[in-house]
Amino acid sequence: MHNLTNIYGGCLWQQNIVPKYTQKCHYFAGPNKDALNYFEIHPESGWITTKEVMDYEVMNSSRFRVIATDAGVPSRSSSRDFEILVNNLNDGAPVFPENVNITFYVVENTPIGTFVGVVQAYDSDAGENGRISYYITAGNIFGLFSVNKDNGTIYTIREIDFEETSSQTIGVTAVDNSMNPKSSVITIKVNIVDTNDNAPAFEHDPVYLTLRENTPVNTVIHMVTATDADSSVNGTVRYEIVNENTGLLKINPYDGRLTVAAPVDYERVKDISLVIKATDQAPTPASQLYTTLTVRISITDENDNAPVFQSYPTLQIKEDEPVGYQLISVIATDADGNFNNSGNNAINLVIVQGNTGNAFHIDRHSGI
Image (cartoon, rainbow, N blue to C red; front, side):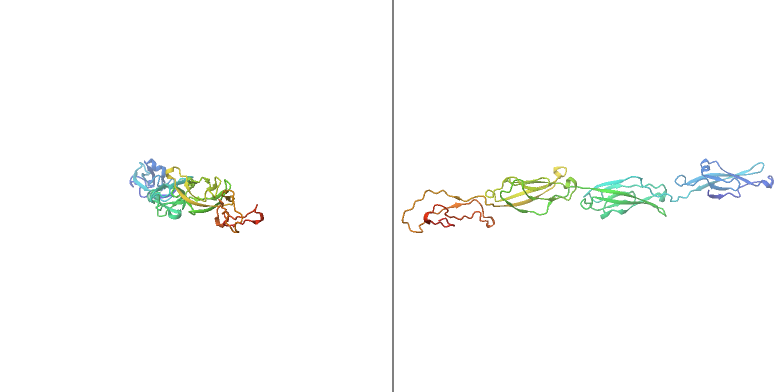
């Protein structure tokens, strides 16, 4: 108990009526019943004391009357009104909700100043002791967010890019405004929501390839790869051939494997130019982004064709023709090419049968 005050000089008597030994006073408080719950007065000394710990937030003042009564006969009394003011001490710190995991979400590329969420603490004190200010004191990498110190509103102060950071952890401190401030901290998580703001990208464009004719069907000749910086379906890529009229090639839409779809014949097609489209899988066709890649393929020749002679009638020659007489020019053709000087279509002519007595000679290059 705390002694608040002492009532003295409050006992009244009359010397000529009341014997001197009766000058002792008796005190009691009344008639405020609420006051009797918190204070008591010593009936002889007049000390007013507290009956329990005072709480400003429950009661900040009390009024009551003290009555002093003497012990004479007849008894006489006097009264006085008192007001006791309870001083407000900063006995409570700001308190955030317990056992609450707070997660906010914000979409990337939102304008600066976009509302993210609100944190609120409670302080049981009154006045300045209970007025709370909020500050970001931890996390907040890249300085993306700020908080309104008066109401705890968190908002963006920089452009937010999901590809830079997909989530942030922020520590917010609530501080009361007393002379001896108390504080508490809450940790919140801010998840960045990805938008489809990046198209797939190929590392090289165009791409140059070579392909041997007669390569078996389903042979993988190249793997095309496009990357997309977005996440989830926004960063998932599918492939397709959008411009290729030979029908010789196909592409796996999921992994970009470019394979042979039909037999390749150099004598029919000597080069292929095709366009591959890489498209992300954003939820709606209107929001999907794509890019294209040009692939140029040179077909290399194999020696898969024998020379072919032109058709000739039976030849006749007169006897006694001079040596060196030009009888005919033999022509043979080869459908193969001479890719990289392979010699696949270079023809050499020789007489291999029926030249009795070596009567005839043919020039291996000209066929004469």
